[in-house]
Image (cartoon, rainbow, N blue to C red):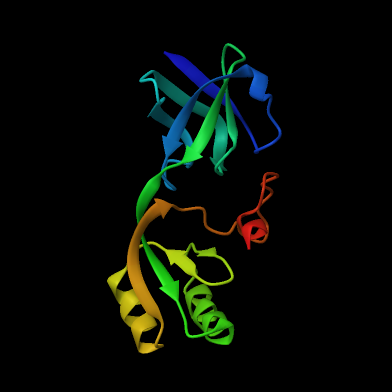
Length: 154
């Protein structure tokens, strides 16, 4: 079984050495050692020195020098919208106060399903609806990811 031994942020790895891709949900993109399967069906052992929060477009170097493209996979999420940008900012503050992973853009916030949080959001008059799409929450303030930051998509 080949091993993925190095991680590189989007844009920091050679596309010319690309051999396959892996589609991983948010949890699977934050691992150190884990068995993953490529799109063409090869089993790969993710074997990094430390856990890394991988983003969509990052690369994993295999032990033979070739690279895998990391693609964020679809997952069940909750889309949070509000009446206007001021209202959305207040909703974002409440979510941040609960330290939840969240993908934030100008007109919506994506979070993982949580009935308690959804009830809170409804009481704040936010609109919540289920969606299925990739989840790339904001990196923490001290995170050193060198790839495209999710907030650059605003």
